[in-house]
Amino acid sequence: MAAVPHLIKERTGKVMGINPKDAQITKSYISVSFAALLFGGLLGLLQGLNRAGVLELPSWFSYYQVLTSHGLLLVVVFTAFFTIGYFNAALSHTLGGLLPKVRKMIWTGFALKLAGFVMAVIPIVMNEASVLYTFYPPMAASPMFYIGLVFIVLGIWMNAFAGFINVANWRKAHKGEHLPILAFFGTGFYVLLFFGTLPVAIEVFYIIPWAFGWIDGINVMLTRTLFWAFGHTLVNIWYFTAVSAWYIAVPKIIGGRRFSDLLTRVVIILLVILNITGGFHHQIVDPGISLPVKFMHVFMSLSIGFPSLMTAFAMFSVFEKTGRAKGAKGLFGWVRVLPWKDVRFLAPMIAMISFIPAGAGGVVQTTNQLDSIVHNTMWIVGHFHLTIGMSVVLTFFGISYWLVPHISGRVLTSTMNKFGVIQTILWTVAMGLMSVSMHIVGLFGSPRRTSFTTYGDNATALGWNPYMLLIGVGATLLLIAVIMQVYAVFYLMFKAPKGQTEFPMAEVEDGATKTPYWTERWSRWIVLMLLIVAMAYVIPIVDFISNAPPGSPPFRTW
Image (tube, helix red, strand yellow):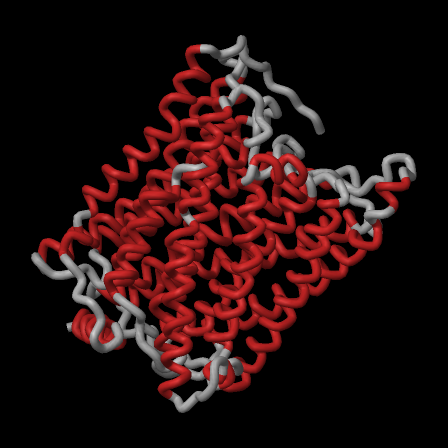
């Protein structure tokens, strides 16, 4: 008899949109995510103040330890835990809950990721792994750092296969039906997550025996290429997650409908097929890569702009149609009637707008001649903070204001909404100030990945100082915004008034083109993706291996 109330509770949770057991999974992932954001933001402040020349870090916690930790916490922990938690909630909501075995796999992945993170952090704290987020050989960290990365990847794979199993189970029970659109996004997400992490897994398994001293040398070009096959994809996975909320949640929040189910699914397919290729545009200045191969990767990198432009057209069409349906007049009258005071709309809308200059900056870095000017300067850091810190992270913040109360059985109050609007504006001003200053000082030649120095009071380096001070100011304001956001998340999770919060999912607009079933043939899209990946990487990787130099021994440069 004791099991009956529990069963009723589970069924009630399903009616509300999420099983309580599934809600606990997402709450755990998001809790870790925002805890990482808090500590990563604090480390970001230390970096910003150091680059501004107002803080000298102690020898026992050097700039490069801070930089490595900042990258690991925000690039690996914050984003990975948030995106996986979000898509687990999405699959639970749209597919009628997660299977019991899927929950076990997700919790196993959670444990593996946490264990890997702890194993990677310990050598960083001990100053045995100050190799930065990119961990390029020939710099070598403690073997424990790389073993920790293996556990993180295994945790990611466990989540990916859990998602595949849940989707396959739904498709088996709903033959001939279209996968719900958010689950379709989730399928693409896990496909990218699995195949995108394969190169870095191969790289790490190659590095580990080298770090232990079991092999004498390592092929530096091969490891750099494997890393960027992963790193290029990782950035686009975050963008992919943000796009899912733009298409599905934002139209519902503003009282509109999705532009087209067919267009949405085609965009998802294109993002999956085109995402992994193009990694060499991060290596344009590298020797050992032929110009034809570099140009091919430049084209592949730029091709991702096509689904992005389709998204821009679809979203602003939705905004205009919704605004005009509410009585807006004139060419831009629809702008005024959008819900700018609703943080669930404001944050992702600013994220979308910021992606316009961020995308333009990406074109600069993908172009051979222009990248030669900005490569390894602070411009790159500014671009990264604009694309990720604005376009992606602000979207994640906007999602949190409805997802966290949804999974917690609570509501977003008007007071907390106003608090979120203030936090969003502060974040936008701070990140804009910092990223624009980074872009400018990068054009003046300030290098990235270096602590504060005037290079012997060189006149050029002294000219960077005003912009570096602005970076320090931006980093300070960002930490305040981080604290506000973390407070908002945990307030909505544990303290907000109890109630039901909707999982916003927009319906397709009337008269939209019917979606053909060929969009559901995921095996075709995966094969096509692998063929394009082979076009991009097989020839250069075979060349790196067959014409490999003797290899580099490990170096410690800190």
